Length: 178
Image 1 (tube, rainbow, N blue to C red):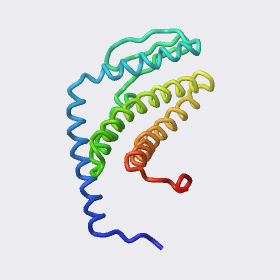
Image 2: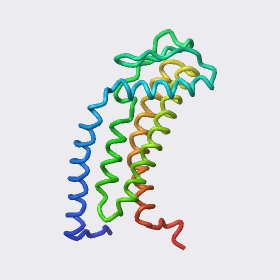
Image 3: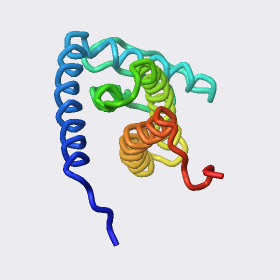
């Protein structure tokens, strides 16, 4: 019924988890040396620029936290650590680099494409949450923010890693094995 795993499989999985954890701590330390407000400001500004396409007006204030004032709302939108996607990015970097048996060039490609995908999806998530807040009110905005955040966590980390790993190893999925 289930697949039996060899001792080598268990050791490889343990090594992957251990190396991912060590790299996560290391990357997290290095990223923590950069002022958090720079990440918050980047996402606030990028999101605001896209929100302007939807007709929003306002401005961004650099501070702790970074605030976006939109004319459509009476209170500013605060951008904090969780809005930056740093946690997800560091986890993807760590898992990609910890993937032994895959050539380093493919790992570097994975980190670069993962970073681009995470940034783009995170900006989309923020803009979608703000639009839901604008269109449907505070309750729907809070619900969509929480829902988009959880989806973001799963899709970006597990989804990206799955797609990247399949590409990097040349593994065929059942639908394309012909």
